[in-house]
Image 1 (cartoon, helix red, strand yellow):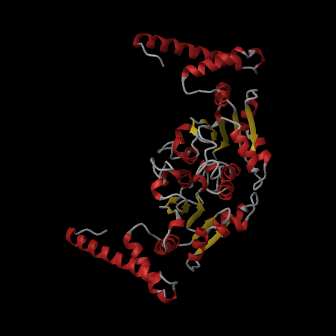
Image 2 (image 1 turned 60 degrees about the vertical axis):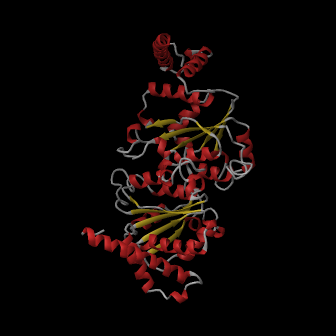
Image 3 (image 1 turned 120 degrees about the horizontal axis):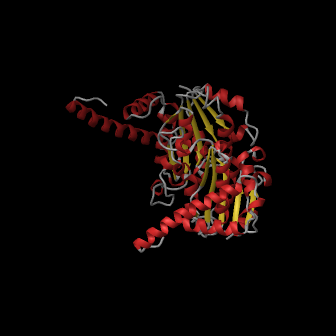
Length: 230
Length: 230
């Protein structure tokens, strides 16, 4: 599976979340990192190049900060000029059909503020409706977004968990079931020298694996009794 | 009531809907027309000027085409750089509180496509959630949007009805009740020489008024019997 990571942030070099993500990127030939702000000025997007990039990948991940609940201006321009009639939708517009639409968004507010009674007043699912509708119109599969709420409040352990989730989000073929997530992590860790990771990473990852194994034991036991498989 | 009409369209000079709206503007000192694309290049928005404009008006109307269900890039940039912390929200950020947030959007698809089973897959209320959430965060009153679906299918009569609705949307202090709409229209027509209007306008407007009067008679009769007032 090939992943196109489309990033837009009006001030990417000083964004702590975007810098965290860039430092967390897995080394993989199957990931193309494409920072729109580094490639283009407004009004200069190369439509042919962008459409060719889209066609060469299976999962398109839109990574951006949710200022005023929408994409940054340059990413909106990208949507407008690249996802054209007869290419992305309309007659003959099936070039993106069946590809996956991924979303990595950062939100300044805490998760609990994202509902009817919170400061935001709407859920994240509701806020992302324009992107979901765009994916739908292009025949793409809108996969569950990876949302980072209030990154400035993250502890070291939260960051390591996020790193794992982010790498899974970009590389895992199917991350919707617990079993797949575990399989992926154990496989990745088998290829990782934990001593090379920054201080604090090793113990946290081991803790995550232990937690997964505990849950897995419980689940397996339940399945044994019910005769079902998940 | 002073209205600030904020327009953004990537190709305003050739847009038939935007040109229709511009030609339909009522002559009024209380309306400030502000076409972002004519004022600014990307990255050049004068924040102080824009904030002063906002503070000098009571109803802020965002007029734009709903390409990919969001604002055009330049309007998104405007939101990001003008609606700042300590001005529009956050500590001391009450400069827009109680002002009205209006929306005039054009959508290429028919109204019936805007629901779960249509091509769009979502209702217009859902699609506008990022704008509703922005208004909410700024303490503004998000008034019912004026949505123009599939303008290219409009007949002459539809256009005249839209003209009336548009003028009401920009100038009427309270357009949520039928009674107010009628009062406004009758008052406006009193000051209008129908013979000066383009061909087709006069009969249509008269028809609208007749329809309103019929409904009003019925409603008044009902109210008489129930003893209630609307």
